[in-house]
Image (cartoon, rainbow, N blue to C red; front, side, top):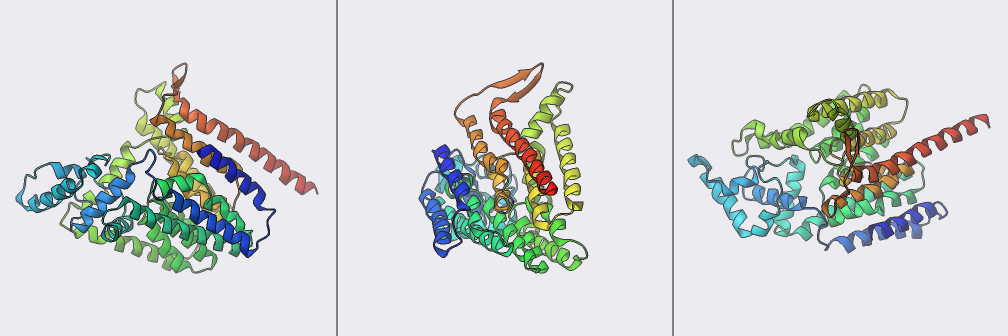
Length: 418
C-alpha cells in the first residue's frame, strides 16, 4: 500500500510542472493534503507507540506534577520519602484509570525527553480531548496543515511554483508518521517553517523567536540558529535565547525537582539511543573489527564529521534557506538515530531544492519497519557486519544520489559552455 501510494505520489511530482498555478490546481493540492490526513486520522498507529507516552506526559502535567520529575515506572514504586506520597498516589491513579495506555508506554524507567512547548501541547490535548489518541492526532494534523500553508507561502516569496508544495503535502512518509502515527516532530517543523518565512520577510526578531519555539518543541532547530541570525544579529540571538530560557525556567522550580532531572531523559537519549543510522552503523561496524565496543567512539566520530560539515555549510556562499536544508540533511544522515519520521525535518526544504535522491529516500526509509516483521539477516565480510535492512534502504539512495550529482555537474558544465 505504501509503495502504491509512493508511485502515485511520484507521478504527481513529475507531472506538476505541466500544470498552471491556477486557483483550482492549488486548491486540489491543498485539498488533497487535507483529505489524505483526515483519512488516516482514525487509523491505529502502525508499528509506533510514542503517542502513548505523549498522552501519559500530558496527563501527568494536568495532574499537577512536573513531567520531568518522575519516570512512568514511579507509578508502580512506593516512594521512600513522605513528601512524594501525594505524587505517587496521583501517578498510581493515572496508571489504574487506563492500564492499557500504561502498558503501551516504552522505556518506562526513563523520564520524558520532550521539551517544554511539546509538554504544553500534550497537556492542552489531554485537557481538551480527555486523553484521546484521536484528538491528539487531530491537533498534529492541524499543525501539519499549517506547515503546508507556510511552505506554499515560502515558495511564493521565492518566486517558485507554489504547486511544488505537493512534495511535502502529499508525501506518504509525512502522512504516515504524523496523521497515522502521531509523532510530535511536526510542531518543530511548523516553528522552523514559520522562521523560514519570517527570515525571508526580513523580520529577524520574530524569526528567531520562532526558532526558539522550535527548540522548545524538538532540539534539532538548534543547528539553524547561527545560520538564520547571520552577522550582527545580536538582538535576535538574545530574543531566541530568552524564548528558550522562558520555556525551560518554570520546570526547574515546579514541584522542587532535581534541576538535572529536566535533562535526564535527553542525556539517556544522547548516550544510549541508536537505530537505523547508516553512517553511524557503518562506522561502528568498521571500528568493531579493531575494538570490542566502539559505540561512544562511533558517536564522537559522526558528531565530529557533522560539526565540520556544519562549519563548511556556515561559511559557504549560499542563502540561509539552502544552508538550513543541507545542515538538516547532514544531521539526519550522520545521526545515530535514523528513525523515518526524523527525515520529515528535511522534506519541507525538498519543495524548494528538489533533490530526487532524497525524495526517494523518504520511500526507502519506510523499509526500516521490516525490522518489526521479519529478519533479513546481517551482511558479514571478514568481520565487518551490517544489517541488510540498512543496505536495502541506503544502497539505492547512495546510488541515486551519486548519479544525481554527476548529472548535475554535467548540466552545470554544459550550461557554462553555452
